[in-house]
Image (tube, rainbow, N blue to C red; front, side, top):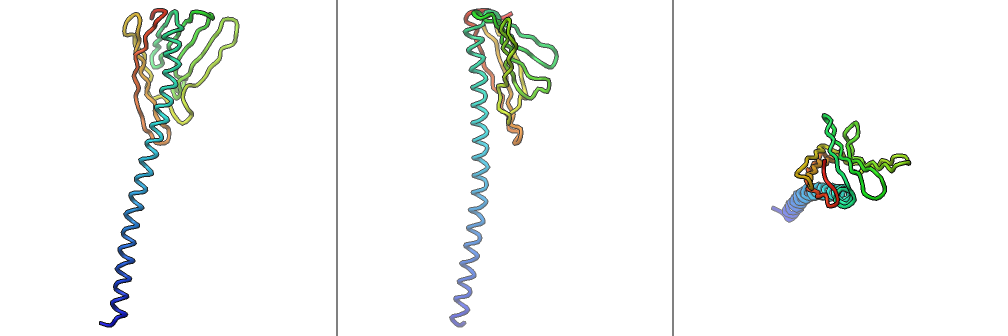
Length: 165
C-alpha cells in the first residue's frame, strides 16, 4: 500500500473513534441532566413539605386550645381553635383536591385563605387520624404535576396546650 491509503485509513479510524466517544458522552450527559432534574424536583418537594408542616406544628402544637378532625367522605378538614385571638385555623384540600389550603378566621373579620403548596405541586393524599388525646398523625402525599414524581410524608404532631376532639 502507498502512504496515502494508510493515512486515509488512520484518519477514518480516528473520526470513527471520536464519533463513538462523543455519542457515549452525550448519552451519559443526558442521563446526568435527567438525574439532576429529579433531584431538583425532590428538593422542592421536601421544601414544600417542611413549610406546610411548619405551619401545622406551630398552630396545632403551641397555639391550639382545641383541635377537631372533620372527615366527610373524600375530604378531610383539620380545625384548630386557638388560645389568644379567638381565631380558627383550618387545613383542608380544595374541591378539586389539587392543593392544601390554610384558612384563618378571626372573629369579626373576613376569612383569609392561603395555599400551602407551590403551583407546580398537587396533593395526592391527605389523611388525618387521631393517635391519642394529645397527638395526631398527618399524612400528605405531594405530587409534581409535570414529572408525576410523588412522595408521601407522615408526621406525628403533638398538641401541647389543648386537646383533640
